[in-house]
Amino acid sequence: MIEESAGNLKFLRNNGFTWIDISGPTRDDMNELARRYQFHELNLADCLSKIQIPKIDRYQNHLFMILHFPTITKETSVPRSSQLSIFMGTGYLVTVHQSELKPLIDMFHRCTESSDARQELMGRSSGYLFHSIIDALVDDLIVTIRSVLGNIGEIEDEVFDEKLSVAKEISQIRRKIMSLRRLTIPLRRTLMELSTRDVQRFSEEDLTLYFDDVMDHIEKALETLEASKETVEIYKDTDFMHGSDKANKILAVLTIIFTLSIPSTVAGSFYGMNVYVPGGIESGAWMFLGKYTTFIIIVSVSSAAAIAMLFYFRRLRWI
Image (cartoon, rainbow, N blue to C red):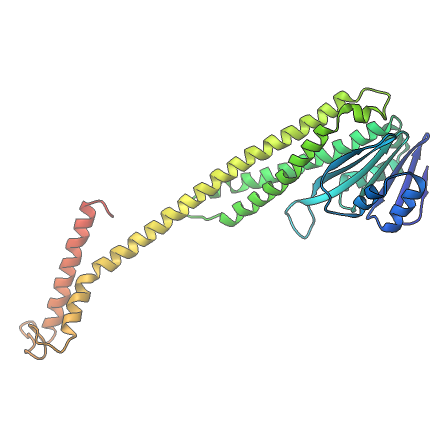
């Protein structure tokens, strides 16, 4: 049975169990929640904030948790943090978020539309529903990580192609990995702090294996991120080495060109002065090869010197 309340509170009931989902909470929503349940005012204030650190507060009759999961919007492809606040007690579960956690929204909608899904997820205990929500969000985290791995595979061939530079693409992937690690590490730490005994208070069945499975998925996700981080660091170093090598080759070619032009520059500078030089206008130009005799001799001497330097550089294996 579904009961629509004032504001953003959505109530979903099944055989005496209540799931309250609050998407995009306001202060009025928190006041309505406080009227129905005896939650601490500080926890209600935390639900309105988007920058709370992950934590677990234990009370006599309920648990309060803040967790962060990555979300990717259409505006940016970089994962950013989305906060999920949870109140868990006997016979009820309250989820508070900012309308960004699609797996959670889809799960609530599925329970709304299907009595079978409602019975499967809400027909056992609040601890089991909590596990189902966390499991779906962790699976979505793994999907996000796989998309990053796909990006790494796409640039692998380009990284080892000396003619291409993929510094921008590598930087974007590094940013994604850093964002995911920044969210996954606190998530693992918080769920490890949440002992099975805490959740077991609100479930008659043993949920140890369920939460062990979730932790195993988080560990694998973190291992994948660490391996991806190392791979991207290798790609970064490789791209830097290729870029440096390419720059060195360009500088080498330009240096050789400049060096080979030195003889003609020196000869031309002498004949451009108002001083007496052999074959110059002041001393009388050479004419035995025609009126361009001096020019021909200067070009020939300069070319011979440049060719001699070229052979010498090749002998030293500089080129």
